[in-house]
Length: 125
Image 1 (cartoon, rainbow, N blue to C red):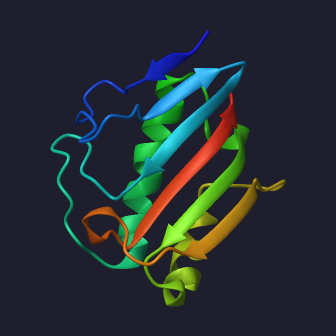
Image 2 (image 1 turned 135 degrees about the vertical axis):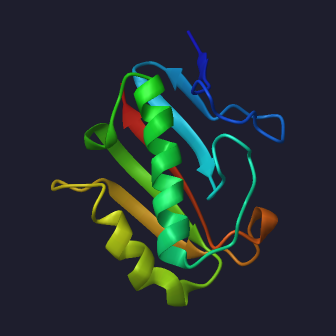
C-alpha cells in the first residue's frame, strides 16, 4: 500500500507531489530544497547552510515515516555548481556514517527557485 508522508508543521508542497511515499518497506523522499519548513520560503545562502537546511528537512520527513539517516540506502545530490561539491560534502558527512549510502552527485544547472542544492533519497522504513 502506498502512503504519502507529510511532516507535521511543514509547509505544503508548492506543486503536485508528496514530500515522500512509503511503499514495500521503503521511503522515497522527493527532492528537497533549502526551504524554511514552516513558511516554505527560500532564503539564498552559502552552500553549507543550504545543505544543512536540506538535511534538516529530509530528517523531518524520515522521522515522520518512522526512519532515520542510518537507514538511507541511496542519495541523489543535485548542485547548481559542481564547484560547491567540497562544501556540500563536508555537511553531508555529518549526517551519514559508514557504511555510507550509495550516492550520485551531479551539476544540474538551474534548480527550482535557483537553489544551490537539491537532494533526494531512498531509505528503509
